[in-house]
Amino acid sequence: MPLDFTNHFVAVPTEFKLRNNTGCFWKVTVKLMNGRVTLDQGWATYAAVHRIKIGYIVTFKLLTPDTLKVIIFDDDGIEVVNKCGKHNEAFAAKE
Picture (cartoon, rainbow, N blue to C red):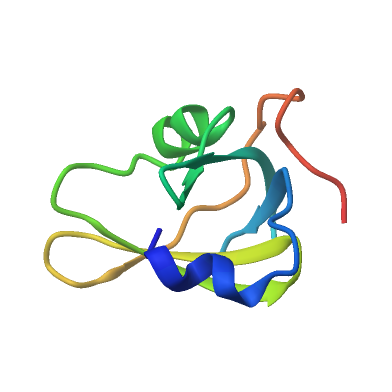
């Protein structure tokens, strides 16, 4: 995530809920590395379940201090709509 992303927080949360375009939530842990915020545990599984491929654009919008809205666009610029299927219970988050 951009370097100045951390300026929006007094303290960066250790976990974010990712909310997709259908309202489902997914938990990921956050790691600070060299002043950058990176999504850590849970992100690889989220990317695989939501079929994010090389060339796709992923946008994040901060909704609350611990919730990001995620919108995925394919390599043609068309929004990818993923219906909530059975998420891995370790990472699926409740509202």
